Length: 265
Image (cartoon, rainbow, N blue to C red; front, side, top):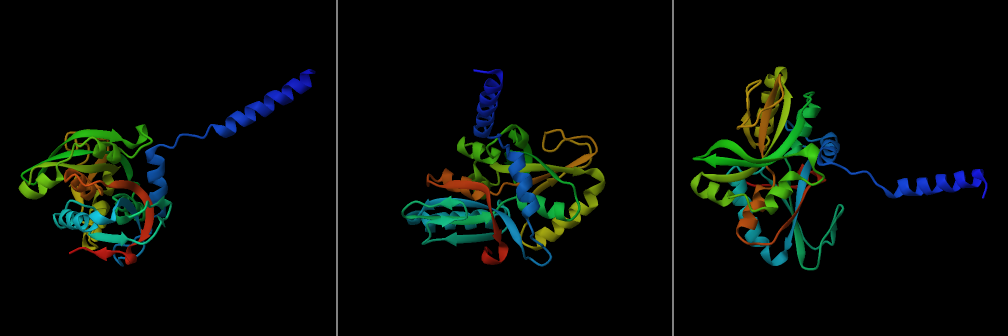
């Protein structure tokens, strides 16, 4: 075999190897891609929002809807919107099994997308568990950063049975899912204005906006930034799990027109 032939074979094998080694996609990359696709305008209450899609048995639908609505009415979800999907085999990229249906609910990435479209360079940092005592957020007890995992941190934390959303609803104390993003400290006034507009559009899900250069519920943040803690969009699903009802959630998996969703009052 000539050196030229050997070089050709080596080049071909290297090319084949590279083509089969797909890059790892970290959670932060998926989040940023969805943030840029959010078009929701809270002033008009129109546009696309980031959504979570939960798959469940049709037989459990009524019970699950009751729990979802209770969590939303207690202010422990992201936005008071819901969409039920029945008699379909797929929704977006998600396939349903036999005798299964889906519930679509807002994801907190919607908040990040709206802040971004308002000219605020917001950056999601981590998801975690927040301890609530007598209705007041006390501290993060567990966190997972978006840059260090390929799996949504909220999914991981839900799977560990660390929440007590039902207790928070009943007694005002327990643990819920939440996530944090940061923004430059000089954007604070604009951030608060956008959050007020979101609140008027039924996206009242902010637990905490910090002062510049201060810890956020026990977690330090970057210098010259503020921390914004939002309630996790999967708290309704966590409450369902706490009741022993099987449910599988695809976090920040789809973009949905908010006009197709029902408002929960």
